Image (tube, rainbow, N blue to C red; front, side, top):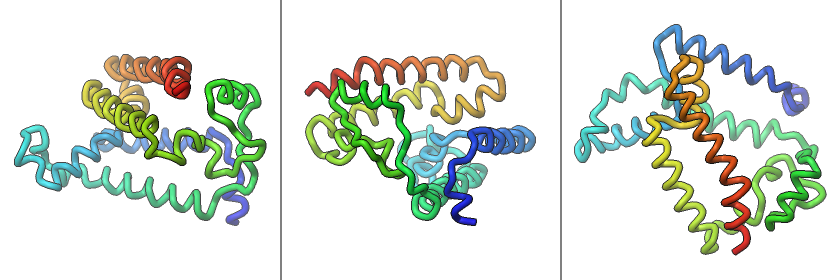
Length: 191
């Protein structure tokens, strides 16, 4: 059974599960988004004493905290017990491009490590990577607050609710991702 679960599943399985969750959320009037959990955790920690923004009834959002806990536990189970022993199959053209900007992929990459290049993630305390993490974290936080939600909230929940603001936000997220991948990251990796 575990061997069956560790084999790659068709992408439509995930898509169908997302549709099912969105149907339940729409049916019960809920909203999906990960960034709301940070707000909820800050509220629980007492941030409402400092800012009115955090004066919300966090108990109405408790289900979302269970969702995040499930995502963490599910990720742990997936990487610990359900990882495929097969190396990650990254296209040769992608490997070639990454090599040109200073990220080298070995010929064989293990399942859990194939998507996290050592040049960026194994030495997070180098000056370059520390700046990348701090500035990147600030930009993600700013963008999430400015867009009134995160990528998952806008792309999954907002678009399924046909919200034009979510469509604009998702277009902005994709433009930002393309700019980062094709222009900013190669420039940063040159240092």
